[in-house]
Length: 382
Image (tube, rainbow, N blue to C red; front, side, top):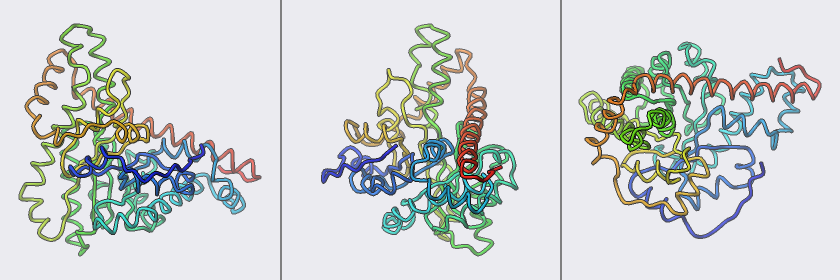
């Protein structure tokens, strides 16, 4: 898909207000065309974008199209690389280029923003040692201080987070759905900071975000509420995801005001910011900016697909903090869902399994597409 540049001197006022409330606006998308056309630079200039996230589905869409990758694919084919190496070289090249575009933001914010995330191979999601090794390799290949390595918050991912942070590498923890797992993620981060400090790393250079997924929670719970069909059930639609995210922020405030982090902060450690992921609205009955407007809180990141970014820029309504005053209602909403027989634990466990499976499937589609391209150039990519 060709990305065109439509420059304007006007900035998106709702996004400016969002940034003023302490929410960092990141783009949940990347492609070579977006970088080469200047579109990414334009979004930084006009729409307050200060970071980029990627995932296997995003790379599958970008590289699977073939646009902008032909020359590199031909070179890789001549070298006779494996398909895994080809994919790794193409994805890290894109992330490196995006990181360069965002370097001024990185420098201006002292490393807080200007970040580009790249995910470990999703097939390694249940293998701690392989995840750690892949994370170190990706950080070395991208070779930019503003890269973040994405590690899924699976059971095996938790000790990997600690090890990678302990090595002084910044991490974006992804696929967080449950409040219990989120607390485990924050604990893994703090343990990593303690390892990094013991190893002599500069803690001020280590940053992390915890990607708490939003819309998928509503999609699953709303489906179950609709099946129940009662007035009480239908009245709860569209409330669970926001409740879950707000209680996650409450946990964040508690943990990072605690004595364990305070001791680390004294040696330069940064908070692990909550990042609202999966913020594109999937139910057309809801306002398309729902998961932007209702999750405004200081010290957070909202990573948006481009359609959500455009909607927020065009008609987003930002009216201050919409999170910290809603903890009691959030608890009441989740309790009401449970009372109807919908198990919170069952839902979040299902969503984690499905999240990993979706990324694995997208990665396999990408491998298949690259294999076909390499073979068409006379090289067996297997």
